Image (cartoon, rainbow over all chains, first blue to last red; front, top):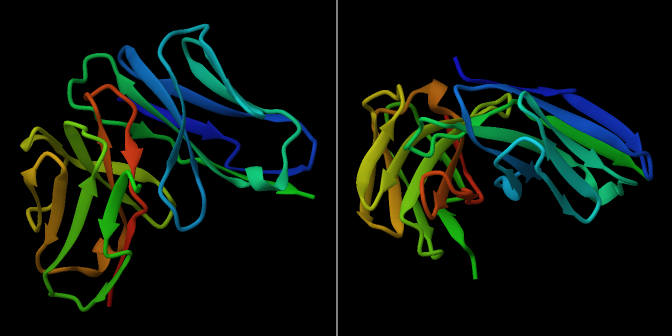
Length: 112
Length: 112
C-alpha cells in the first residue's frame, strides 16, 4: 500500500538554527514528490516538485532533496516567518488520476 | 488575481441539511480536485475531474456529489450532513494529472 510518513511530527527551532524535515515514502514507482507549506487557516502553498533520485531544488532558506526512499526539506538559518506545517505528498508511477498521497505533516515553530 | 477560490470560507449547519461548496480556478487548468482535511490535519483526496469528467471517486459516501459545469468550476454538494462530515474541504487544480496541484483557501464545515 502506498504510504507517506513524515518526521518529526513537530519541531521547535531557535531562529538561525538549521535543521531538516524527513519524508519517507513507499509507493509503486514514484512519479513525483511534492512539498507544500500550510499556514493555519489557509490552503497548502506549493514549494517544490521533485521527480527523480538525486534531484535538488532550492528556494530562499529551503532546499529539498530526493532519494529512492525519502526526501528531505533542509531549512537553513530559519526565521520566525518560516513557522508553518510542511506537507509532503507523492503521486505513484502508474497513476493517471493525479491522486496525491499526503503525509501527516511536520509542524515547525521557529522562535526569535 | 486569486488562482483557486472557494466559497464559502466557513459553513455552519445542522445535521441532516444539504449544503454546497463552490470552487473556481482561473489558471486554465484541465484537472480539478476535492480534498478533505480532518482534525489531525491529514489531507485525503475525495474526487478529481478532468475536462468535466470524473476521474477519481475515492471511498466517499454517496451523500457527496461533485459537479463540474465547466473546466473552471468544480462544486461539491453534500446531502444529509452528518457530524463526521465536519472538516476543512480544499479544492485544487492542476494542468495535467501529474503536475503540481494548486490549492484553494479551504472551506471549514461544521455540522452541529
